[in-house]
Length: 342
Image (cartoon, rainbow, N blue to C red; front, side, top):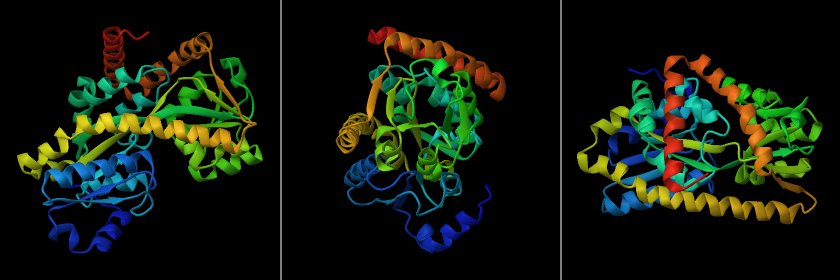
C-alpha cells in the first residue's frame, strides 16, 4: 500500500465521497496550466472517451496548481485519488532513475516521425520501462514530446566553447546538471518561478524550455537570443494508477489504450502548431530578439560533447541504465534507417 503525503490527504478531503462514489468519473491531473499542450491532450482524451462510452464515463481535468506539485500528482495516481496524470521525466527520475535517459541530449531523432513511432510503441519503453513504472504503482499509458527545447540566452552560443562560464538554468535534476556540464556550461538549478527574475538580474545567463513555455513565462523579454540547437525534445508521460487500471473492465481498459494512436496523431500536430504560433507571437512582441538556428556542423560539435553525459547516466543508474540507453539508441537508429532520416 502506498503512503499518501499531506497534499494527497488534503486532496481526498476535497474530493469527499466523490472519490469512491462516482466510479465512472475519471480524474485527469495536468502538470501544466489550462490551454497548454497537456491540456489540449487531456481535452481530446475526454472527448474521445466520453463519446465512445456513450456518456457512461465523465473525464474531469485538473490544471496544474489545483492538486499540488508534480510529485504530489504522481502520488495521487499511485493511491487512486486521481485516475490519470502527466508525469514528466524531469521529476520522475527520483522515483524511476531509468527514465532520466530522456534528459540526455541528442538522443531522440531530428525527425519527429521517428520520434512518434519510437515514443508511441518502443519495446524498450512499453516492455522495459513500463515494468519500472508498475513497480511503483503506475501504468505507463503513453509518451510524447511537447516541442523542441530552445535556449534563451544573453549571448550568442555557437559552440561548446561559448558555454564557458555560462550559467544555464536547469531543473533540479542530477542528470540534467551532468548533461549541461558535458556541453561546457555551468548548470544552475533554480525553481521555475524564479527564472524570469534570475535572467533579469543576471543570476543566470540562459534557460531552456519549449517555445510555448518561453512565451507563457515571457522569458524572451529578458534575453537577447533564442537559439535552436536540436539537442532535446521536452517529453512527458501519461500514467494511470496501476490498481485502478487493472480493476477496469476490458472494455474500459481498451478505451484508454485504443485511443492512443488517434491521440498521438492529434497531439503531434497540435504541439507543432502551438509552438509555431507562439514563436510568431514572441517575434512580433520583441522583434529585436535574435533567433539563431545552429548549422549542422555546429550541432555536431554539441552532439559529440554531449556523449560524455551518457557515461554519467550509466554510472548514476547502474547496469539497467546502460541497458536501456543502448536499447534506445539501437531502436532510434533502426527507425531512422527505416524512415530514411539522417
